[in-house]
Length: 122
Image (cartoon, rainbow, N blue to C red):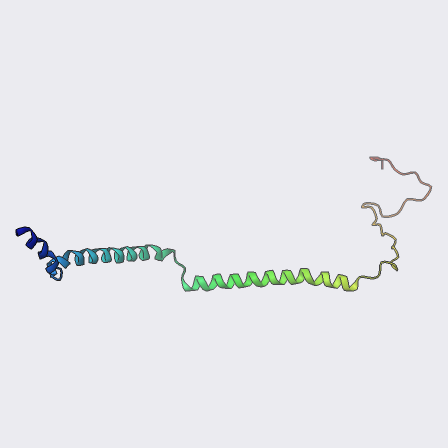
């Protein structure tokens, strides 16, 4: 008869503080460890976080870069539109004579009957 009384005893004591105490202590230890770990992480990461001034400056740089890219995009699109609008008809287009630039070092042109100088001769 001793065995059945022993089996009924723990369920009757489940509300007893002696049975709940180890679980409460273990829960508090785990909770405290998690809190200490979070505080340690936060204190270690703090020097690497950006200050509000740095965040504002980064946002300002992003905005300037975005505005610059938009301006470049508009500049690329705008001349293309102007070229298309100012483009004359291809049927009425007369080719212009090419304009040649004078050779460097020659101020006056050679006469028509003079022979051409060879390379290295004065």
